[in-house]
Image: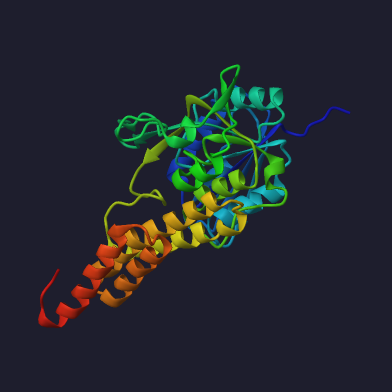
Length: 337
């Protein structure tokens, strides 16, 4: 009997994304590698997502599995998709982004050839959804023109792949994250056998799942070519279009929770210090400032104190904490600092 198990499972959470579905199907149809199933998890959409899917099919006939769930967030949806996945490899995509047509093809060949690699990723390009203007050519390049520290680690070169074999990978992942994380990657299903996504997050957990995978010892490799085209638009769940302090506060609390959850996976003093430095940074330059802007001066001062306690040798935190105390004292006088 011929094996009909797909090589890849492509998992896509959907939430009120009817207008992006033609683009999603176009990027799936364009893939030169065809042996994949598509698992669409509708996270409680209230638009015509289900009707559109019923009326359209992928041109090349890939299996499409559609499931509807009550709105619970993208990570619950991803976990649902993982529970249904039959593929040897897992690819995640968002309904409003694109892959180059070579994405799956190149990565399948690489993972088939190199069985020790668990997580293979490429660079991400950001474009304006409406104008198609390139806003960022590669997330591997920092604002100052240097390479992202994670892809600047020591690597072993294998037929165009850069396989990371640097002992500092865990510390660097904590300090700088894994660029692109999930959507520009192809990942062995075995990575998810014991560790799935934390469904209580609504945003930002991609970065922490990737860091946790590094800390758990999974083998990472990358290529410099573009493997994800990220569309910037007002409806994007991760898009921050203003500096609303309430939004910054919520984001900071998510970051603090995520970094705190890394501590049980650390195994060296250097890794613990890296986590504490990240917690200090978020407390000082995100949470404390947001609380100040909201007029919550005592809470702002407490967040700055927490930063100083986490990184006691950082004089900037000590100075900012003292300033926050002065701010509390002069506030009743109507003086702002």
